[in-house]
Length: 358
Image (cartoon, rainbow, N blue to C red):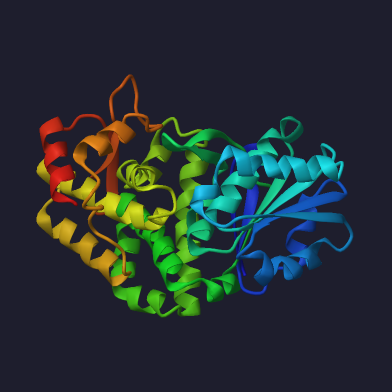
């Protein structure tokens, strides 16, 4: 097992990465300050891991709530069912919520923890690659709105993150690929050496080699922890973690939540951002080719949906969280491993990208 720390002063917390961590109280109980634990999972993950996870909480009052599975259920209506369970069980302000599942479960549970009785503790136990390398770390929580993804939420840091890589064994191939998109993102925005490692080891990752997966999770979390520690509330460099996300969120919202997995949309979005960067004269065709080949090796899309028009993209992107004073801001590339967030790009070239990458 390896442990990283997200350094945020008195709100710092550990990320434990390794195998056979699920159900071990040693890593979890130091972070529980009351006597009540509510485990939030979904109908896919709960049959696989709920019983094992509960073993870590043998000395606590444990309840659970099982949510439907899918991005389309990351909404206020489903979020409210967590409060129903908490109130019916008379959970107090010292209770701890535990998110057992992927990114949707983590986001919705974290937002419930941020809101219940004006804030209670929560713990992340991510069971997908995407959640282990990205969404479980950093304290972004929330739900979707029909007009935009993650538009309702709060920053609320977990007390700890338990990334048991054994849970990746039950991940289907499509979900594994979706998680790899977020792994590639770190290489694209700030870690060119890691990008090269991914080019050399993608076959190992796709074959689920345990050592390769563990390294990818560790290196990704190292990158995420450094960025979050420097810019917790996304007033500066943390926005770079949204590489591919402005285009990607538009794909998710435009096609209907759940039609495209988040990682699939981000993969196409990263290529779109790279295409616009090339049109701006900031990178060359070689960089785009490297990114496309890497994503193709991971069985990820490199273009957006053909039936999503440029006009529809722009309408959705206009309500993106990174937009300021009506101006769409994008994470664009200056090189593999170096990115910027900017609104200084040609609207005409953006239109060319939206036409070409579909």
